[in-house]
Image (cartoon, rainbow, N blue to C red; front, side):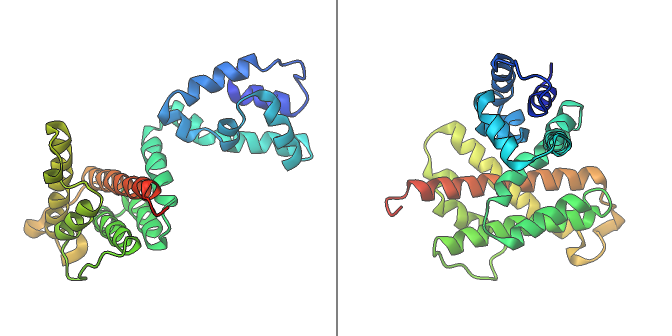
Length: 243
């Protein structure tokens, strides 16, 4: 029996004798994987044992039909991933970080970048770069660090990386320095990519046409960098002595 079916039967009175062992085993399997855990319904993550689920679902919905519909809808993201829609997973994991960031501009740019990947590759690349710019500026504002609006993307990122202790020169470990240097290289590539290919400066040089694969790469990279910056920013703030 799969997890969604088990919870549906339990919530609609079809399997009142369920002892919860199957639920515990299935839940543990998904929770153990960080990717599938991110796509689980929130009630599965919070309800460690099956008996915790009954008061939750009973309180929220009075009819069996409502419970069936709710459980089915909540499991859609996980099922989409398990059935092969792997792009959704990447978007969802990054989206979780972006959505927790208190900045409407960042939310808008992430949605815009996702929406334009296939239909407007140029626009997707522009939104992807703007996403990183906005994340950097918001982090600097929240940390009361001054920056100039004239800063280009590499300089803006460098300022942000330094305040987050992410500048390669601040670390001695060779592997960490390599990774952080790679992120910096990606940022410089973004600056060049938009200047050369995107709609920020009109038609691409030489008539080069931006394809879907270019926009997907740009959006995925921008989302990963933005998520990394946001998580680092929030985690270091929590560890700050002033909190």
